Amino acid sequence: MGFGSNPLPAIRWNQIDLTGDKELLRMLADLPGKIQRKVLAKAMNAGASPIKAAIVRNAQAHRLTGLLAKSIIIKRKTYNRGSTFVLVIGPKSQRRAVRVTKKGAFRFIGKKKAGEMEAGGAKLRYINPAKYAHLLEGGHTGPRGSAPAYPFMRPAFEAHKRQAEGIITRYLWNGTIAEATKGKRKYRA
Image (cartoon, rainbow, N blue to C red; front, side):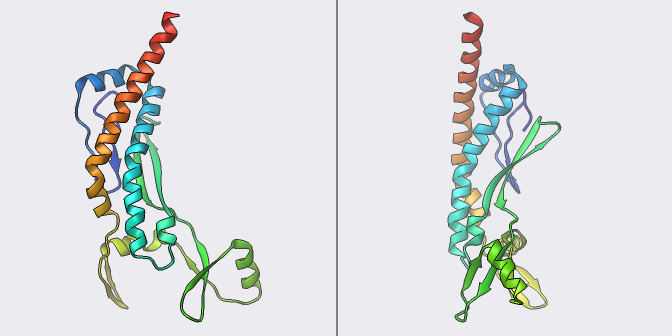
């Protein structure tokens, strides 16, 4: 997101464009860079929250272990020495040990217990949702056959894009006005 220009929050493969009120953009540009980043970060995090919640709900519908839904996070990536940042919503890369029960169900094992079991010669499976989320989202073909797509991220984004735009705009207005008036009160006293 460029500061002092049109705010352009981007979310993963798609983006939300906020081109709007020139007064809001002017007020935002008049704020110091550090305060601009603070206001924009709060607005973008708030706007991404309903999208994240919808992605988690959709991921729970394709439940095998439940780890995919639990691993969905919002991460802010910063570029150009902090002048540009992007929010990424997706699964966190975390590896969890599981054992398969006789009935075929997965049981999660803590790190300490997994270490003890492996030392004892037990074979464990490790699951990392970041390694298979894209295959679930888009489907795949391979040597073991093909699997259909079960999209859970794109429909959530498309369904909540307008809501996110409204939240971001509201947070930008409220945050910019609050910071601008806070600064004026300091200098008047």
